[in-house]
Amino acid sequence: MSVSLVKSDKMPSGDQWLAEAKADPGAEKIGMYLTHNGVVRKDAKAKVRAGADDTQPVTGMYFSYDEAGVEAAIEETYKMPGIYYIRVWLATGELALGDSIMQVFIGGDIRPHVIDGLQFLVGKIKNECVIEQEKY
Image 1 (cartoon, rainbow, N blue to C red):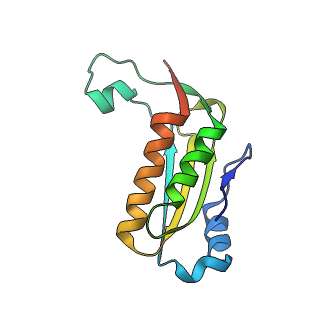
Image 2 (cartoon, rainbow, N blue to C red):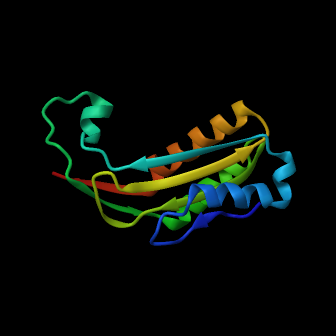
Image 3 (cartoon, rainbow, N blue to C red):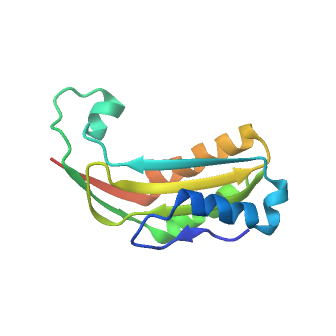
């Protein structure tokens, strides 16, 4: 297990990540992979999370992240039962509607462990490691 934050200006291919994961020496322990791909949406966070009706449409976003925080979240996720493979990519800078914000790929032994691991890791990253500034 290693910290698996992928630094690139371009979002990696999900197919490539899956092929790499299946070729990994620890792949024999993995029975499931899940992917999360977050994108910039038109509805403001306040509207979809809190039900606010007085929001303007989002036209884009400024996005950044705390690298050390993301790496710590990945390390913490690896300590969860049955989690054996993680890759994370995060965008930076100005993003447009439909652009990918992040891609999180996780593999583990059984479905409940992988679902819990993905939910935990995405939640940690979104709640503790990123700065999202919506543009209107």
